[in-house]
Image 1 (cartoon, rainbow, N blue to C red):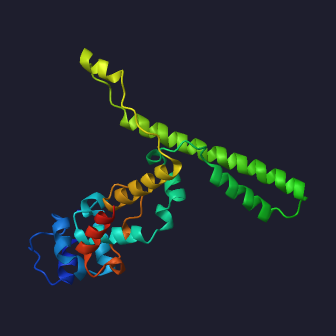
Image 2 (tube, helix red, strand yellow):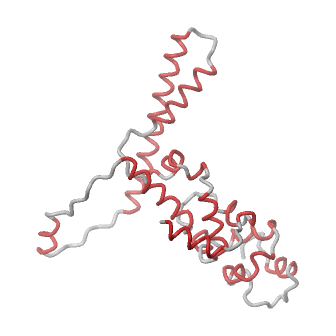
Image 3 (cartoon, rainbow, N blue to C red):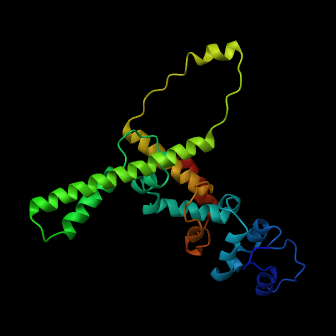
Length: 226
């Protein structure tokens, strides 16, 4: 059992017998489905120790809390932030790190007021270029790491398969707007289904203020709109 996660504490709070079935540590998802709204924040948050975001997706209330969170357009899932946080999900071809470089230039101009305008401008440009290159290298490193993790040795194929590979399917190029919209949708979907690695799920999954009056209708509305 995970340190800090005790069945006895949880069962005692709910005045349930110690041999209650299911036990929180044995089947936490089923337990949450039954008692999610009965537990206070300091106890409910402990379930992060014994469940994963993907597992919690099966709980309708939690899935809809995530849905409502994405509908609020949080900055953490915005295009600019998500593109840098999950670069392997973004297929755009523009130079990386430009936004970070611009921010570094603005910071230099605001904080180095003692020099001449030309000196400050030169320093700002230098720092901006360095920050742009650092961010671009960070993205390249993540992409290389992801490529190595995803690598699967090719199996031998028969001649028919080889003939087919000579004529790859032609796909219409996406416009920048379409690519961004697809990326934003992919981020929202992966967040809702617990697949967005590194996302702050705890602050959403256990936030009862994100509950809606009719969770199921809210979820069906989202899929109908898409």
